Length: 83
Image (cartoon, rainbow, N blue to C red; front, side, top):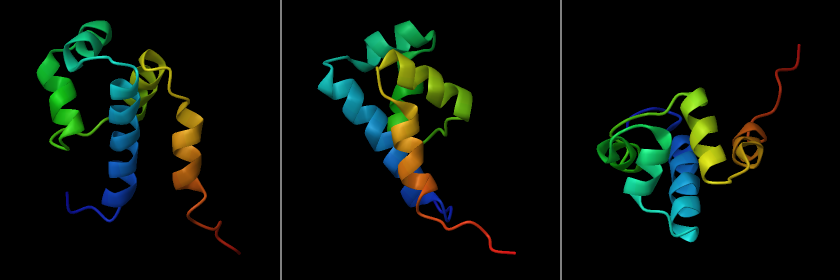
């Protein structure tokens, strides 16, 4: 992942993966609840496929992960533009 946002995106993915594992949910169980194949979850967790914001929100809900906590950490890394 060559994006300047790679570290932030890896944080998002690591939080989703941690939430899944902490709750004892398999990739298969999550993929079935999400309505996608297991390979989708594997590709997301391996960084082969990026999530959009709506997918992130749905996965967060399924995993009982508060999305604002994840987003807030990234959001607070930058200062607002001063005009």
